Image (cartoon, rainbow over all chains, first blue to last red; front, side):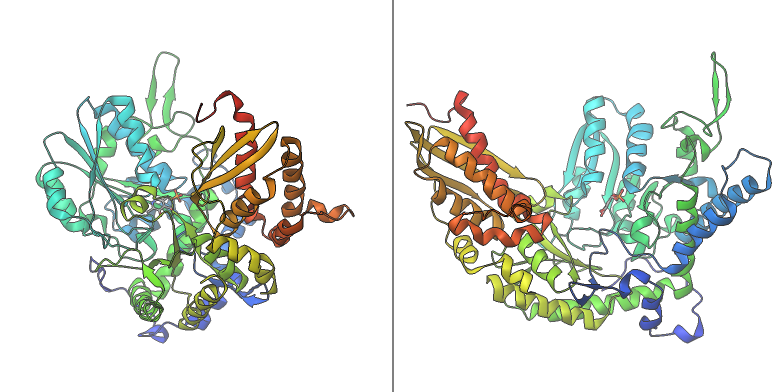
Length: 423
Length: 150
Ligand SMILES: Cc1ncc(COP(=O)(O)O)c(C=O)c1O
């Protein structure tokens, strides 16, 4: 499987060149050491949330044990340390996604809040009745509902880029859906329901040719695909720390500086102001204008530790290994006659969505759980795409670099057992 | 593993593969729709009552093995029962699948429905087992809005 964007070569520690040392990596994840229903845990629900390495857990604990204070407020030592940790985390994220300025990185609760921020602080003041927001048919609810809400508030219309049966965007249709009324394109990079990798570069080029800005939902891709916001030339990009081996409750909105500077604040409160008088309040500079209230400092510290961890292993190494694992999983699962993949895009990563004859995915999930295997079943918060592909629900196995070929074999055996029990 | 076999007992598998009373009921005087947003299961219960007795009970919709088998076995179980008996049966069934029956010493006396005893080990699946029953209870109380009026 190809990744869409090539990343400048990262430094690879010599002992890891070529092959990842999976045993060593797994030893970093305490949660993976357990048994479930007497079987070794096989965690294949990484698209829902990833597990956290010891390095992340320890960074959060160290922050609370040693540095905890409020940020940007005190002159005392702890407050300065906390502020420094928080701002260093911002710079780590900036480097990770190739942003030009640290103030283009806004910490949020997650991808969902980042998208809502853009919907309310960017789109809402600009939208007029009859304007259009363009999303795709494979979006997660968090990249649908915020746009529906802002459409309701402004009289704008939501338009949808259709997909084919394989789960790929129809790019010709996309091109013709960008009209003089289009105010924003918001698309997912890597689909959580289908595993499709969308051709972001082309999507952004086409939109920019008509002066339409683009928001990228990178919630899934941040952990699996290289992201370089400058090279992509996207205007906004959103992701969550918890899907990137970091803590829950922390996420990122990247926004192009010129655009963020023009936007009004999202929430009001402390930290987002320079001065407050009852007659007039002056808003703070970027990025603080968008970070009202005490932020999730420990979360930011944990996210930075997760990024450091990933970069130490090497994003290219991780992508290469995960692609091999995905190919192998596709090959082995394809041998199961009763299994049908939902989502067969030519460009895929990390996600395997499938159905087994007419066995309900919930029954699949329960029986696999009995074998120690964690997968997700249901509509994956993407009901419209399920409807488009005429399935009420799917079973979804999603990979991370700590998964192994042996675990794929356990999954295959588990699926055979499902067929034995209910087929 | 044996827990899995406890859950998917033969009778449940049979009723999920070949659900009984799985059809519309044009002469129904009470109907209700139930929905389990967690799994997208959807069930419609149709009842035909006369003299306070359930004369006919059918269901439509699709769901997982547990919810389909539960709807199927429920329609069989409540046929011929008075409204009070049907509701009492639901309370006993509910206690069985939530595990509350275990804490009291009295035997559940639920006949065929006892195949659902394995559900109590799967808290996430209790809703699947009770969806049809909750919907039936709503249908009974739906007297104000019968789906078909004759
Ligand atoms: C593609 C995609 N977008 C957005 C989200 C929302 O992420 P969060 O719930 O962390 O805000 C998810 C989470 O499943 C996702 O898969």
